[in-house]
Amino acid sequence: MSTVAELSALSGTILSVLMLAGFLLLAGGIWLLVKQPDSRKQGWLMLVAAIVMFANVAIWAVPVRG
Image (cartoon, rainbow, N blue to C red; front, side):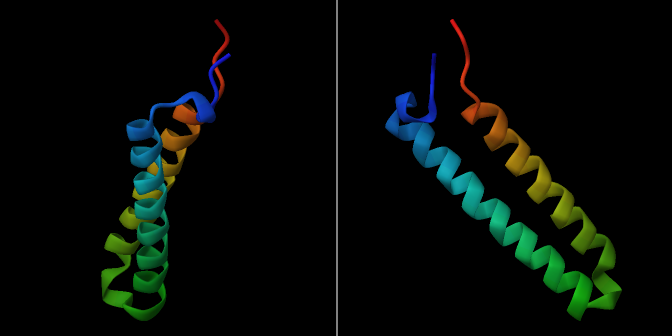
């Protein structure tokens, strides 16, 4: 069974960078929604992009049998 610990160093680094980018997109999207009412569309798009990033990391980190 493959786990996150068995990922290569490069894969782990890429997943970490994706998580950091996702948190930055999440924070930026919330900030745009709250502080910049004229940029609500961009704020929502940033939130959707963050969710997609988190989903991608979750897919890659799930253990696989075989």
